[in-house]
Image (cartoon, rainbow, N blue to C red; front, side, top):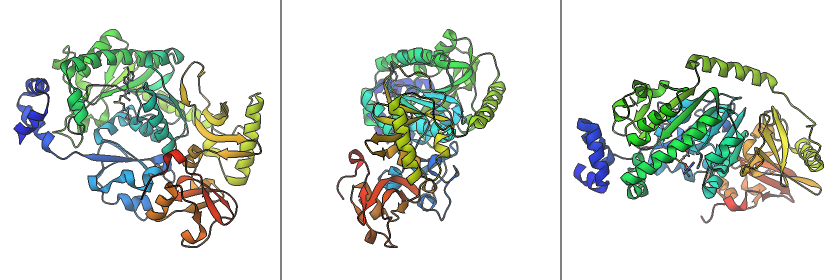
Length: 496
Ligand SMILES: C[S@@+](CC[C@H](N)C(=O)[O-])C[C@H]1O[C@@H](n2cnc3c(N)ncnc32)[C@H](O)[C@@H]1O
């Protein structure tokens, strides 16, 4: 069996790993015959006040019995036949499906509400949505992706998970860096890599692998890390990660980085206790590299990963943590609602007025939406953007913040992003599509009627938040005894 596995792997890869791992190689290759581990991460932004759903609540019941991923606060393992990606809870952003080892990265960076955080290679959004959950809607999260099509998917995932404080950009890191000199408190560099850790999960990764590809990736990673270094404040931290085993892209990437940037040091994240340390002997022998993290598929319940936490400047990690906590307090004091934003632009004033009317008629409390944020017009659309937002001129921006909607002639059309960022308690009118069947009918774009609901009642008029398990799925508009479906056409589920 073991021989079969090895035969399916690139020969040069097998030889290299045998040399690196010595007597551990057998267990390593055997792990390729084991079942893949599937993971999902509960989205705290969609829970009542950030806490985990409990039994007795629809999501809590759905997840009942799932084993916890030990190193991720909201991570769970699930069996393949559960198919959580097909459940309406997925469309409600109740969770993000994420490989368990990948959950270690945002845990290691540990962003705090109020910080300025960048996810530099962000699509499809696993780390970004994890970071967003930890930030709780406060501070600024810039999610960047170089490839336009992937950036679009990233933007959709940011929307689905109800993230309120994210800016999504589609930039080459080299072009992004000049816009944010020494700006961020924390940066995730989940680098493009040769993907050796995904061989079990993804056949393409196996077919694309070659020693030359490893070298190319290592070169790419050096450039991306330099961009991250330039965008980081003194005292800030970078979480660098790959899903590959090759030392050239891991310990050696970090060794080369430390050589170019002596102002950085490596910090050992606490979660190393679940994994293994890095191998200085696979790079330049610098003992600091022991503080990097190796996730081995034969030693942990997850795919192969590498992680390094790097801190910029002279200060110790303790000093960095206390600054973060002080900033957090400062930012939470700032809070408060700021009406009548000082933007002279007539279109903006008009759009804000239209939103205020919509708000008065349909919402109860938007304090958590607006807290410390300001309004911005982007094309015809009205956004709420984080207060610390820098000038985005010259950047390709897909989403400059939370999309509220657009002001039409005599009305305000709320966006799908707004629906997903709202809680049931924020709105005057909502309906619960309790059964999976009814939720799927809504997701297909069907018009719903009173007789579809157990109590045979629906609101008479106005915007209605459609919820499943208490979590928002989208908007509908009540009129003439029906709920007109406003689930975006492009997202509708096809077929039965
Ligand atoms: C490992 S994936 C990121 C996964 C993502 N962080 C997540 O958790 O969902 C690496 C990303 O880097 C992007 N990438 C490829 N070449 C790049 C480059 N030259 N500079 C920056 N990013 C690049 C890829 O498009 C890909 O989305």
